[in-house]
Length: 129
Image (cartoon, rainbow, N blue to C red):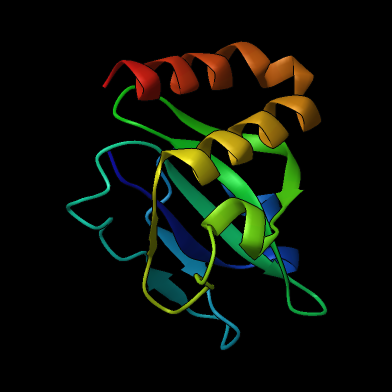
């Protein structure tokens, strides 16, 4: 099964506005930009990430076919851990395998204990597929 990470805009501008079901983000030009479609092969977990000052990236939204969760506490992303070896963030969504996504979900659960149940349900559905 494949999963994906997709850019959701600059953290400082967009995180306070982010809601489940989001289809757009505010660009640096101040206008709304459509989020692209998720890659067809990303049938598992999908993570929206934002860029923080200093070229740091943070996972902020986790969704699958049954849930769409905006994290209360963002998860700083480590490309080696959360994307897998040899991958990096790009303008297009980044497709990953199970192992890095399981590591991301573990980090998201640890940083968001009051959202743990919903995130654990997403992880369970991922393993069942």
